[in-house]
Length: 207
Image (cartoon, rainbow, N blue to C red; front, side, top):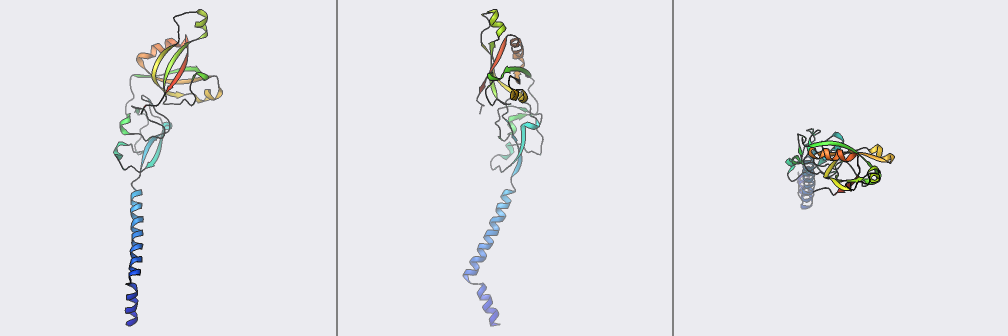
């Protein structure tokens, strides 16, 4: 009987109780950390810069797991497809895509117009989603004709690049680029194709 009492007394020493408390605290901390990590969610993020008017494709998007402490409802769960949605504001590469930045319907006022430009007349690292100004530089035939009316001029202001022909760029020479152009400005761009070479000036991505 005395040996059992001594054994119980040993277990009730302050050092033993403190050790027990520390062990319980460590298990509690591990549990709380585990619960916190379970609150991460999968959302959509952009793989490239996206400009207003662009229509999202699978290559524009990636799924990322994040822990959102503030306003998680403003971001789009990757459980829901957003391919085919239209971009309403500029979105940077690797940026999470907010729900208010896209629309289920593409803008009816934008047209995709292909142009060809000399390789050296486009900024380096130009990519889909960039915002550019398009200048027309009189081509050689217009210079020979000496038509003074054909001066270098701004043709389009703040339009977005929809896509770039990467293969043509890698080969050198000319680059094929598709622009998102307001429909009211399409005729002016098409008219300039025969008389001018195009120079692209990249704008900084809007915040």
